[in-house]
Amino acid sequence: MSVFRSLALFCATAVWTLAAPKSLEVFFIDVEGGQATLLVTPSKQAVLVDTGWPGFSNRDADRIAKAAKSAGVKAIDYLIITHYHMDHVGGVPQLAAKLPVKNFVDHGPNRESGRQADQLFQDYSEAAAKGKRMIVKPGDTIPLKDVEIQVVTADGNSIDGTGPANSLCSSAPQYPEDKSENAKSLGVRIKYGKFRMLDLGDLTSRRELDLVCPSNKVGPVDVYLTTHHGLEQSNAKEIVYAVQPRVAIMNNGARKGGAPAAWKIIKSSPGLEDLWQVHYSIAGKSEANSPEPFIANLEEQCEGQYLKVTANSDGSFSVWNSRNKYSKNYPAR
Image (cartoon, rainbow, N blue to C red):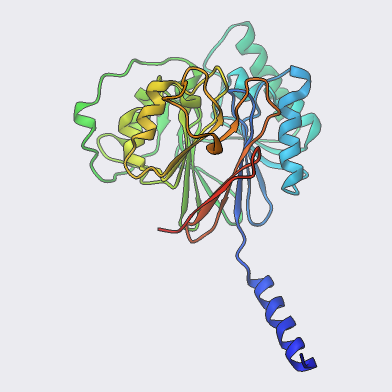
């Protein structure tokens, strides 16, 4: 090969490397039936949704820190707390001791009271006082450089707007009112170019319908993090079918979430290509669990394997299982 050809090849490779599109990375971390979802933007801003449980010898904080390290993250730019339950906010002090947190995002005061609820909120408030606290409402966005995170639910309210009529609403059951923090969940819709993802925390069904009835204000998404760990108090058919996910990720534990009734609704959603799970669901048995390659943790006593979505701005994405290194690509549609 001539010097000129070698130089031309080097230059072409350098230009391609510089122009290569960057991706949004989403880590669905195993916190044993709680939530800890780490988003790393193309510009390397880090957003963490919830922190899992307290205690367990720093188990959940260690798992989050490990995922962050693998992504080259040394600090959390925005910590979004969906609601003040122990499996979502309990790990904040331990996490903050391992990784600096710059901004704390929440829906405002805890709407539950009692010894445990008061202590959880106090611990969170003390941690948030060391950074900047943002109380958000539906319609607000998290100020990121290249990814849009819009709040769609918060403190029992949902975004305004209109959308296509949802034919399922006319026959929807009267879901019970939920006065717990679950119904106050801060839910977000994540956009990166043409890619869409929805995370509603533990929002329960009556509040889920506010987003899609009588019209669908959310629109279709590529990835749906199953609400409330895949419990049947959430994941109403009216919303799951309305958002038409291509892929669903269930952040269940071995004995929490992954309810067969909810699993079957999600699995039957029109257009769904695959349902991935953080854990094998003991309650689901053989009829309500995905095939083994799509499950990050098969055993109840596990090492905390995770699922990772890598999304591109053209709407294409892939899902990778850290346990078996199995990966599947989903082309832009």
